[in-house]
Length: 230
Image (cartoon, rainbow, N blue to C red):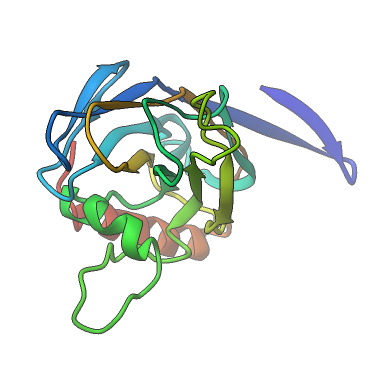
């Protein structure tokens, strides 16, 4: 824990970190038959869409919320060890990587539609995550694609990068973390390796006025109870 001086007030900044291991998404002998190859930590493959894999974790903040503290976030970032790589790839093969930290849990069904709508409302009649901007502490959407120039190397350079988070304060006793990978490659017999990542949050733990804290706590409780996840 680091102490910094701000306007003659000593503020304690808590730094949290969570690691996600690498994962290899394998394209088999038939088009659109993806599976999880070598991997670290808890990677899962939903039934749909093909090419999607997910890893879940969370920051446990119960020690702070028991002391009636609210977390005011200073920074949120993701460290990543290099670029995704692909074996036997062709120009145009790509993968999308989504790094998400939220104050509200997402169901498996919501994780499956996150690549399409993220934390936006979406079109009427379409499936959405239900995740709001305020509930999204941090979210990053990146696309990597194999280019003609780098086809021989197998490295997939980043071609887009979008930030979707709010850094909104929370009284929740958990911050839910999701790393979502969607792969799309043509042909067969390919391996796409996604490198490990580290999620980092730094926040001030402060006491709020009683009414503001109780309302924030009530809202955090309602959001967590809407999804019964342990």
